[in-house]
Length: 88
Image (spheres, rainbow, N blue to C red):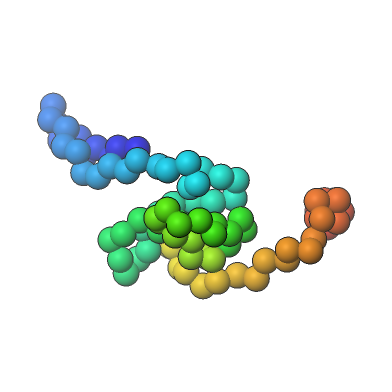
């Protein structure tokens, strides 16, 4: 992923990031925490237990909102069928 800043006819590379395979798993997001410049894995819905950075934070993704890292509870015993019945 590359972030460019276009000024007139010039373009300047502002930032770039190469995603690793474990970051692309379902229900995970990568972003920057407000108080740190490092990339962070938000994996509260699908916890990452591997040894390759970035490591999981246990925080839920927060699309369209500030990346506030407050761990959320995850129901591990909930089956897919029971989950679907909650949202019908």
